Image (spheres, each protein chain N blue to C red):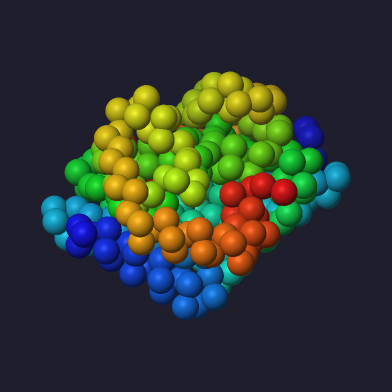
Length: 146
Length: 146
């Protein structure tokens, strides 16, 4: 497995250990991880810190040139909010752990010229499906569903 | 002027007083403001807390039913990230102070059934144009531009 996706999965597992939703992400620039994060809905009562957003936040303020040479790794297909953040900052490539459990706005990414690679890792799929089975309400809240 | 847009403008002014980017927002449900916020790029070194995101964050974890009956007020046309957050949570209506300085993803909102009202308040326009004139680099950073 790709070492960056592995680190995104580690972030997801960390979130699970904290009692949170197991979705993790890393932002990679020039081969280096410059930000990593995981969903913070439970831990910080945050409605904006999805895994991808948390990775961006932890990377700190970066010049546009850095985002435009970066790759975002995420364990799960990015929701509309995270998709929007990717488009805002002009991140050109997104590697997605899986899109079987939830398919986000991949089409919008591609329409805007973002390269989207879906790995469909069984580890990512199992982690998410196990979580949703035992926490359906929390999961629905995270994606704005009743 | 609409009292909710007034409060969004107050939030923007508060941001300016703090040395930040003057964009403010409020989330209104059942006639009550349930969250208010302003851009926190400078104050918290945040790359995700645009005004709209900060208002959502400050409203806290809400059930889907609340978002789906809410109106988001923002002093400036929402960028792709904030647009994505509006779509994620299914907020049906957005009131925009102005879209002369910056036109965000209004079309995407409308394509997804969101009602978009643009006020083009001279107060919002002046506030933003004055800020950009003296802080062009900071403004460009906020919208992911070089």
